[in-house]
Image (tube, rainbow, N blue to C red):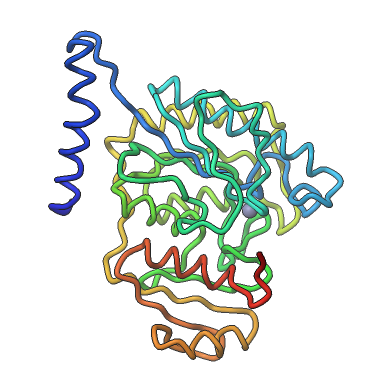
Length: 306
Ligand SMILES: [Zn+2]
């Protein structure tokens, strides 16, 4: 923890916690516990193809309900573990998948794009734990339903400081920048195993077993939600034993594109290095710079309007 962060933490303590303690008295002081939930869709119970994952699919509306049910289960598990404040980032597709009128009134939801912290927008150093719901494995994994990293159509690999990263790793590193540990992930067996190998012994809810890119042996939505509720609670209760996943700065980001031209044109920028025909490198002073850079190169287009 840097001096700046120490100072911020102390100021925060003075501004938020101490007056509350003084007002309520030590016996009744309620411990504040903030939980951040990042929700994707490919790893939701039952999701296997694009039919579940976008507005044109025949089963998308049902899958939005299953995804919302999993986020609700995570909120319930978090509350059982003492959570007092919850922010949920809708982190799939158009960022407008969750049925927000089904969520409790004291929850804040982050919707749509672009956003500087991508799937982690809304997190900061005041949070105590981060949760990943509905996650999938990386484009570099030979296993996993809809395995991809950020863009299935355009990217063939994302590395941070030389390590191949799934979205769970990138997002854990963003949480790690703020000193927040990831405590739980749900998804298929490939996504959960990959995250645990990379981030550490976090709780995992395996709601389906990947058979192929477009097939899985899945639980029912209700069974998946029950497992998520239990694992979220266990993860938050174990948060003190789980370390934030911190990337050493400067953070070296390598991005490989399926196509040639993106790498060629991005390398016109003096901050970008061309590593090979399909790969560029950016060095960020922190994960925040890296996150903004990834969001920029995966969002920007000259046709961008309005
Ligand atoms: Zn997704």
